[in-house]
Length: 249
Ligand code: PEP
Image (tube, rainbow, N blue to C red; front, side, top):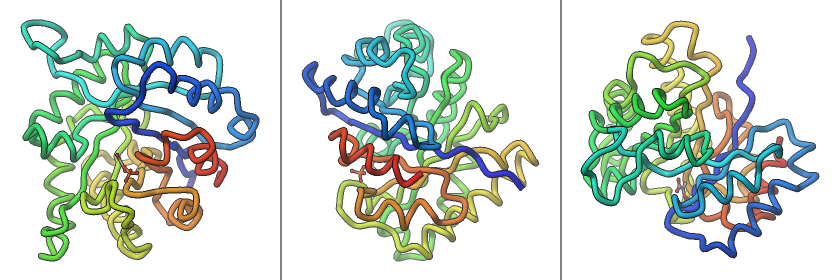
């Protein structure tokens, strides 16, 4: 069968001032990127969203955001809506990152409504799931993934409007990565859960691995079956590292 075109997505988190747009410019203009068979995306802080999107118009690099509110507008001080992201020319939004699940107590139901809002505004949602270290040690990993998928995904997902990112919480920003066998097991499980719920539609949905992906380990991780790219935090901040990961493809 056919396999999805891979996606390498950067997540800058709460990093990046205007002078960091030089990194975006470097990635967007890179011959390396033009030569790779990969979709590339960097999710920047909201403050940089529009500048980055304007700067990369007409290049292979897409620009996205890191979270959205589930409502389109209203009395939600400090939040931004999916329609604001689309209006700023962002194409994607990360929802349910573990830093938000934990730091802001976001639950599966709220992530599901954010995903619906993203789709309504024409954005591709990158829905993050993943077990904590305690859950892995307690042999609950697949149960957690099943529950998060069932709760976080609405019924309208397609291979175009949704990407799943599997990010073991204990591997994010720690320099530790899941073993190749564990990544393969989790991704095969996610693929099978999706196929039960969505039939054939999901066979081209991108499943990203995230958690301390860097140039030195990317090749090994990205070649695992059902791994269709990566969600990259720290290593996405420097253009040359991000490009080195893209160039695996
Ligand atoms: C992330 O923020 O989604 C992530 C995977 O971070 P890092 O690559 O730094 O572990």
